[in-house]
Image (cartoon, rainbow, N blue to C red; front, top):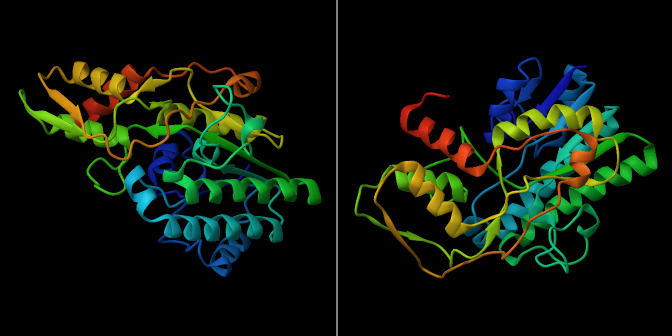
Length: 300
């Protein structure tokens, strides 16, 4: 099967290439996904049997919160163009990446399930990004219902690992920022962190997702926005404590109690594990591998 991956030069796409080297990886330099004619032409030339849609405008909590219009517009345009071009160019299989950010800010019971997707608005800090991902799900599912094509979506939790943006003040995710902050500190430093340390997150090691995506391409043939997340759900404070222990540094830290973000966003992986068998990497092990690679440039 000829598989085309959008977002091929992004964090996830670049890492996926190490696991699926025979797939075709499309970068923004090769095709502007905000221009539907450009993607139409790419599909006409390559004629893929399947598209794995990973391309998105992504960033950290602060940038998401401050630039809601940019995140909504760019992601909506990219997603709509990709899905519509796949339909009009008769691509029979599409697997599109959502995010657990699309799920409600609060639900009655945790962990939430795929059925909770529309039970309330996304968190305010990810409001526009979350809705753009919901729109992607609606688009894929409506094509599935109207045209009978195998277009499905998966919803990964927070992703971290080798290849992330570690030193970008606006677009770095929490774990990447944490790694850079601790690696660049020295014994006795007192580090500042945003928020209160109370919010909890499921951190998904990128290599796990890279191994899962081919399984989903083969086995996720239903309309559910399938949640891909480990069982482990840690507070920000717990993650910082683990990070300091891994670094073997004598570091102090404090929270500034600003822009705390969503308190909980943990999703159930039961539906996923009913489709595939998988053992997730613990946060301690995944953080250690990523931290050591950041310091040395060598993978374990």
